[in-house]
Length: 416
Ligand SMILES: Cc1cc2nc3c(=O)[nH]c(=O)nc-3n(C[C@H](O)[C@H](O)[C@H](O)COP(=O)(O)OP(=O)(O)OC[C@H]3O[C@@H](n4cnc5c(N)ncnc54)[C@H](O)[C@@H]3O)c2cc1C
Image (cartoon, rainbow, N blue to C red):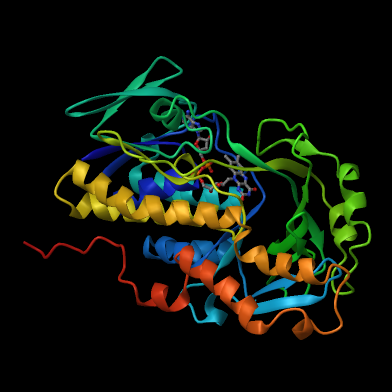
């Protein structure tokens, strides 16, 4: 069996590695002329770290990211609403990593080049469309070339060419009115030194977490400042690499001084700030046509709430490889993949539209917009716990369930 994988992002590269580990040949076609470490920080939740660890990448991940120890919700005055341990400290068998997206992509690219062979990873190959017959799939590229495989996995992101071919009337992604400004700043570590903090509420939010350490001991702190605009606000097409001027949003956070964290100082310390509208797409009625299917952001782009975009793409990749290796035939493998992963990811897309676990900040803001003397007068611990726990179950990262679930590695065949 030979698979064509479109897109060399986190979803596509994990798919290639997972297929290879499952004994299935894979070839990756990436549109970018060169793969460079683009983006800022992302989080890999324990369910995704499990999959990458079972692909033999645990040590490389530990060296490239920060093992998150704590997660904190606060209001816009820095008053703590909720703090919980994360990763190993929360009882998971696998850590959570906060990591630079580009470093993760390069790590996966190198692993794929070593294992599949560099000749199976192609850059500068932008897919235009696909054709199918009973025996396989032909991919057509902008350079005039084609490639042929027994099946095709489209991991070509939020502007997927294959999704557009499957659903020609879908149109652009949907914007919820929020703009995200994202950057990395060098600054002193805060709280545990491996804490992820979210402060504010659904209309104005600040998120930050360390993703590494500079040679001088300062932390590389990834941050996201977020503001909701009126519905008629004009926005440009989402582009992960569009630069922004901090002067445009620094005034919104000018008095966010928490004592233990200075939001304006972090914003001022950034070298380069990137701007992105918060977009997603509606869950689809189907992902698979014949021997071609969608994966990752091509299948289920979601708001970056609950830090699950990259993690869900990694889960897709591993589950797909297991199904292709164990179901009787390609169509059956693709059907089993879609039957499990399409509803699971649609639930995360919907939960993120309702602000996901961040709802705990919205609850407190609605009841105590000017802050509080005693949190227990505003909200009970049970109400907060119910909100964050419900999201973990939806996203497939409830610790007990994840720890107990059998591996998605393909069982080794008995010798002979
Ligand atoms: C440059 C870049 C920077 C990002 N930075 C961040 C970030 O800082 N924080 C964050 O939370 N998320 C970021 N994301 C999104 C995040 O990586 C994804 O939400 C998540 O990892 C799911 O990954 P994916 O592989 O499904 O999609 P993506 O990561 O979007 O990867 C899709 C890949 O497909 C390639 N591609 C697109 N169209 C074609 C085509 N027609 N033919 C061939 N290849 C094609 C793209 O070049 C890309 O490499 C970024 C994405 C990109 C592409």
